[in-house]
Image (cartoon, rainbow, N blue to C red; front, side, top):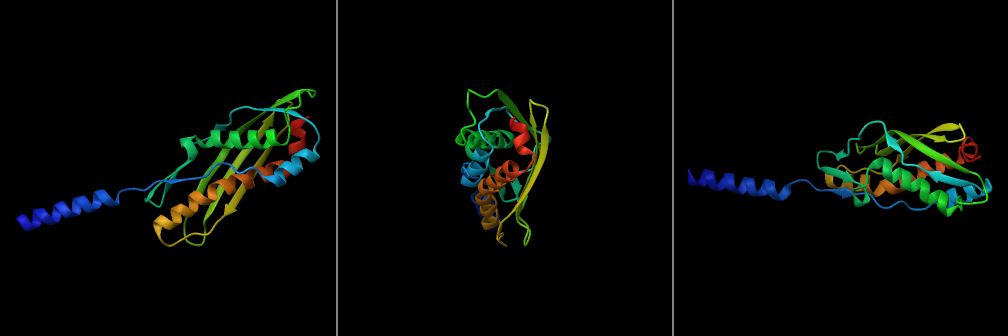
Length: 181
């Protein structure tokens, strides 16, 4: 009986040591390509309002652990800040130009870490106070791993560049300059 209790105790300790891991995506890396594109549109004065989120995304990776965003910021807040940072870098705070307000509705926010199909998937509807709007989607593929821990690290590592690809896709869309007028 004591051998059984010892074995169960060791099993319980082992399970406690394994537990869940957490994986954190990086901060938004400003895009020089997006900056160049934005500057080609001319001066603007843009205020980015907080984005909203259609549904809370599932951030659990392979039952190994959750994917966290830097400082545990909400997904829509991360995207809001990414767009705001990119527009600020481009000088879109020109007080000599009538301001417009851009808002966003995040319609897709998720990832897959399955073998052969690793990707981040985003969808955002951007709306301007001038009445124009546009939809942008972006799928960012990344390498996956058979091992759960390594695969989830790949998900977290790909997050910031995936958001950068979303922003680049949005600002290079022919509809984006219409949001700025």
